[in-house]
Amino acid sequence: MRKNISTFLITAVLAASLSGCAGTNTESKITDADTGQQNNGTNSDEAETSTKAGDVELTVWGAEEDEALLTRIIESFQQEYKGQANFHITFTAQSESNCKDVLMGDLEAGADVFAFADDQLNTLVAAGALEPVEDAERIKAENLPGAVEAASVGNTLYAYPLTADNGYFLYYNKRYFNQEDIKTFDRMLQIAEENEKKITMDWSSAWYVYSFFADTGLEVGLNSDGITNFCTWNQTEGSIKGVDVANAMLAISSSPAFLNTVEDGFLKGVRDGSVIAGVSGIWNAVAMEDAWGTDYGAARLPTYTCAGKQIQMASFSGYKLIGVNAYSEHYSWAVRLAEWISNEENQLLRFEMRGQGPANTKAAASADVQSSPAITALLDQSEFSRLQRIGGNFWDPVSEFALNMAAGNPKKKGLQEQLDSMVEGITAP
Image 1 (spheres, rainbow, N blue to C red):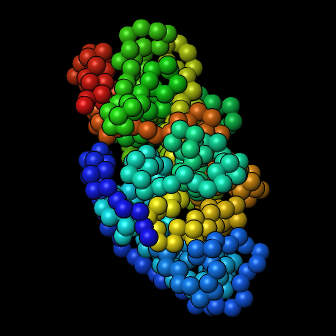
Image 2: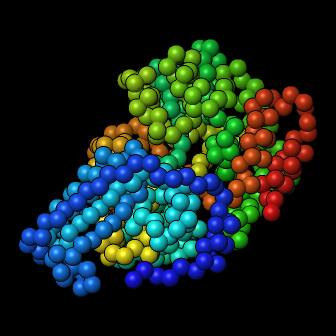
Image 3: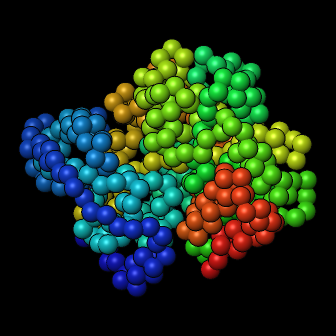
């Protein structure tokens, strides 16, 4: 029997949700009706594995691009547990970015096992959609600390770490920069100016703009209500003030080598040769290698000059997780499948087939993963990254402020006034 769901609780959590809802679009069904000999090398569960001919129906949600990968993983899972049940495992494409919204629409009808972005964890736990992970200490020991933190509420692990690659770092063309050059934004801009080239970053996205404020002592984060934000980015005291960061951004944007652009502009510039460095994520690694070949380089973000100091640019970090629906009819089997999808071997397979960075410690340390410039850069940047735990009012005010900095503050509006307005928007109830 599945647990009874509190309609009141679901309604309350849905009211707190900050993003939209999207449906599924692709399905593939994989079955195994083999009822041969039981695999004695695996653990048994009296409720679900004592009968060889028992039917086990499971639905797995994952990214559409992961269908071939997950199909292969599901097939190997069925082979591992061959004979212990009649498996009917269905893959359905579902975006990881809005998984919680679809799941919260009807938990009982939702997937048994699902991939989701880590910033959805708190909502899923609050709704009772996830139970604490079994054998949590082993899972914690097998995965990177940041991934474990992302999969936990407090000290309790609620999901299985899957990837550790949803962040950003520096791409650069080795033809123009050496290892010393890429340490500071100032030096990179100087080189780009001398060569009449561009260095890009997307200041329309608060996700990237966070990097200027994060290691200054100025703070932003989620309040205990899980909805509203606190923010001190307009601080007027201390060794680094809000106006210091604003002036630093204006200094960068004043360089003829700096180009504020979205992803399409970055890629276009890389391909036509006008862009020789930019801040982006692992999803562009193949495009960088195709465009720059042996000159393709990646590294952690540089420092930038702020209030006469060199400040390390920080970043938001993100992780993909695997969850097990607490309302699954075959919960024990769903747990086994979640563990299987996220184990070391299959995280390496995910890297091989999809180029995604493993959360598993041993997989991340493998020679193949370490040979990837983008993965290595992301791991180096992780020392200066923070989990994205931000309420919805963060994004627009930061974007508005940063776009004005990118334009050079053309109306010459007071920087403190702009910072105060931004923070007022960020912290609005």
